[in-house]
Image 1 (cartoon, one colour):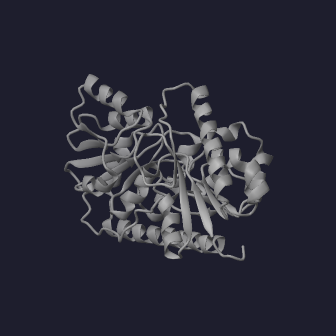
Image 2 (tube, one colour; image 1 turned 60 degrees about the horizontal axis):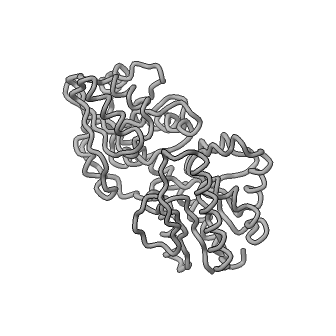
Image 3 (cartoon, rainbow, N blue to C red; image 1 turned 30 degrees about the vertical axis):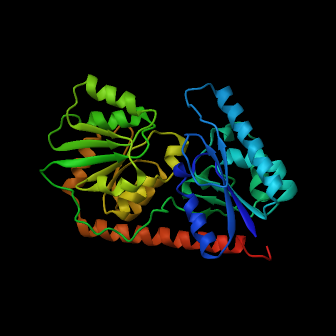
Length: 354
């Protein structure tokens, strides 16, 4: 048996693929990775579509590039006659559906890691068909089931491929002392991060560190410099393997997000990073992440128009380390159970009698 793993970007931007690779390697399944090298990064994959993508280009140019990639993928699939396929992202599933229905009905998994704007333009019945003819649909957040067809069962595969044994470090949350708030990962949303910066700017009890880059990085740096904000620091790009070193002495991890459907229903990588390393989080209210925080006492939940600083100070004043530690253990147990169900799904998917 041979399986194709079809990504919509570079492997380095798709850490969740290792949830599949780990199982396939353990049970001796041969697989090829088909990826779109959007960032001119040399990676060891079977088939790479090498075309740099500039987000600043027009939508028409980006759509054209996407269609070129789909043609590339189709050629690879037809030449190699795979027994199974795993597709990452909704647009790839939509564009490859005619081939999937004809050649690989009930022999593909659609793995969904975020909401796609294309869902606004695709009839519901078509999405229903893609799911109906799949072996299964995997989602990275239970929140996604709120905008997917209700009549199907979805398997959760968390964005925690980096999972390690919990780091039982001393918690760095301090009353009446300086606390560091860390935002780590891609800086995509300017407004949400600006709101957080304004909440703590030039406050002697807080410092803020932003680790990572993306489209909001330069505007945020300019905003901080223009407004003479002295307690906010930026590191720029970082190597993922060095992520843990930035967690030293961090009191809270910021995951405050905008009020759109994707942000409200996703589970971010930094959520798992924080909880696995015993760091409370700041999350937006009315979101999937807020539901976990409330259930397991994992941090601070703030409304879009809240005074974030006041909420955080109240949390620090009432912080109970024992309750927090117990909550992290219960949360990690739950996601491990979800991951066990996902692993069982892959064993069924790769069984020869399917």
